[in-house]
Every structure is written in C-alpha cells, then in structure tokens.
Image 1: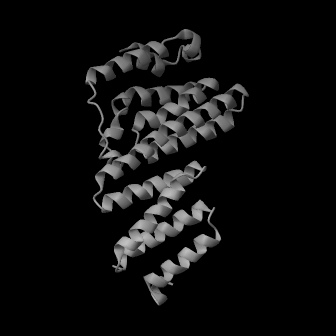
Image 2: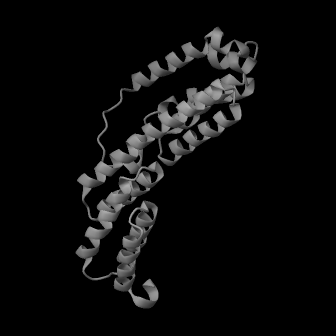
Image 3: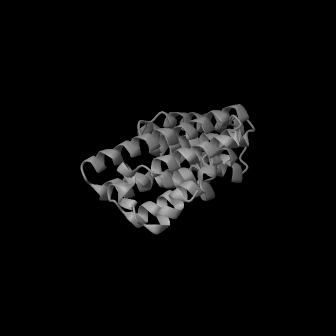
Length: 231
C-alpha cells in the first residue's frame, strides 16, 4: 500500500484499522512503527500531523498491561524523541527501559526461586536463562548476566558449574556498572562509582563463597580451592 498508493492512503487505512481494533495495543504499536519508519524514508509532507498521531499511538501502547508491549513502546518512543532531538523526553523513556530491567529481574528471579523450592531445577534454569537474556539485551554488564545462574548450580550441587559461574562473577565484578557505558542510557545521569567499592564487593563475594555451610560440596575441588582461597 505504501508503494502503490502512497503514504497518505496507507495512513488513512491505518486510522480505520485502529478504530476497528482500538484495544489491540500490539497492533497499534506495530502500525505506528511502520508509519514512523516510512514517514522518514518516504520524506512525506505535513510531518507534524503524523508526528502527533504516531506519538499518541506509542503512548497508548506504553500503558498496556503486557510488559513486552510496554517495553516495545518505550524503545520506540526513545527513538522517536531522539530523532526529534528532544533529549528530555528521550531520557524519560531511557528511565523506563532501565527500571524495566529491575522489574523483570525481580519477577523472573522470584519465579526461579519458587521453582527451586519445588525442586523444579529445569524450570528454574529456564527462568534464570530469561534473566540472563534480558540483562544481555539491556546491556547490564557481564556480572549481571552471569549472576542469575548461581542459585541454579548451587541447588544442583553442580561442582563444575558452580566453579564456572563463580569464576565468571569474580572476574567480572568490574562490569557491574557497565550499563553506564551503554548507548541505551546515554542521556541518563548516574553517580560516579568509586572503584574501591568494587574491591569491597569482591571481598564480600569471596567471604560468602568460603562459607562451608553453603559451598561445602565444593571442598576438595582443586580449581575451586585456588579460586577462592589463594587470593
């Protein structure tokens, strides 16, 4: 329709479609994305008319109950305002993306903990993998990518798995705040981090890993002994 009938006809069709399905926010978001993209590439006239409606559709999708749709809309709004050089609003949506990680991390980790209590290690591993994927996608740093698997390997008393996860955590303590370097949050203002704090975090981790009650099953595994005690 864009190619054969032009932008305005496609836009009018989209208006009618959304009036027919006003409660389908996934449809609304996807329609807005297509119109937004073609608005740029087709160099259509009367840009302000389309700006307002596309923005309104993104805002509508942002308030959907489904978190996936919320995050799609927030990401689209971020790009939308960035292209308009409206950095104040771009920062607002960066904040939504950033806080969204905390929410998803909490919910998925809680669900994984419940699965472990029910001794469903397979499902807990699946959920922890989702936390890892979210941390990777939202550029939260290697430490935050590896940490969700610690409870899984401990619950299964997986000696080699525990060693690998703990080594990754210790080697990547310095990446805990890597999100500050990400382009996803380029307009957000973060406090400077004192590097000595990270040294303290590593010491606290080592102290915890030396706890025989929790990690007694690792006793006698030579790589573990070197990793945890020869520091």
